[in-house]
Length: 396
Image (cartoon, rainbow, N blue to C red; front, side, top):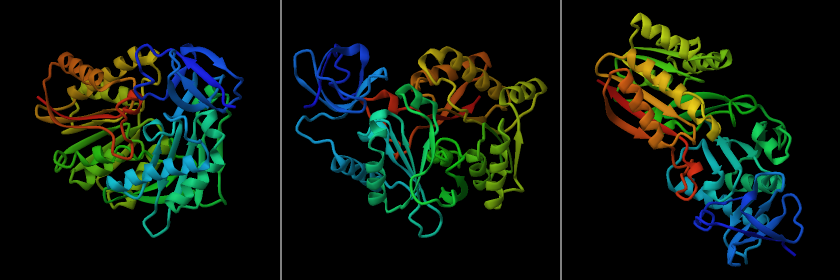
């Protein structure tokens, strides 16, 4: 017999489509659900809200999987959801290396799955993250379904993330199939990237910036470009491919600098790309003081605001680098500025950039605005699914 969770939902957040039921919403629990069990959720009037998995350790007590009471949550359910996610990627023209499942936006809360495909006919490598107890319990089923839907047989687990501790789970990393070579090469926008799914950031490589990388093509021909927080060279290599005369990439990680240099050589761009280990804040401060200038500056930092409580500090950090970058651009130069902090909403991000421009005594003109590609879909009822912002701005 399924347990039933009775909740208050005064703003209709859950009834309107958000899958998270927090512990402070619970009125009472009928039954004794165990960790990860599938439970039913009803509102304070007894109306059905949906079914989801339960975890008393987490502040998110229930993560809803379906709005229906007559649907059985079993292996077939997860297979169908993964097929729907795959069909969306196929229909929207996503490249071979793609995010296959984007958690809540695909109706599979706390599940992330990426597919990395090399340049040949190989079916690719799947990288899996199960970031909640309820989803982790279905891991074997999920692996089987993902392999069946995508055709990829090699699977690697990247559950080495701190967020799992909030669910009472230990970090884990390793093979979920027979062992294989974890370093592969993939293609993005006609460039080759070397990816190591065992050691790279997150699932091995950031797949979400490909459209924003391509958006700089009109502004970089013949330009001197500074790519800050370059990581493995995302914007830097695209700038060189699109005709920049000189590209410098900065990152505080020596491993990232090495990988960016490797990727530049793989694409025959090493003669125009230089990568340096540096603190971006210090570098921009010193450059602005000395009058250093570039034609295009890219800011693609890691998430400064990892929680809502860190937002004020993050705002100051984002503003400081944007202000310093503007001071290093001539009139008519271009600033490409990004944020992957979901707590920094698009409106807050624009306000921050505008405030930095006022303090730098510069004016801005929009060239393009970007976000996430279709394999990282934004669900309108789940604000947390919208996290990536990118602005290409002319600085006057």
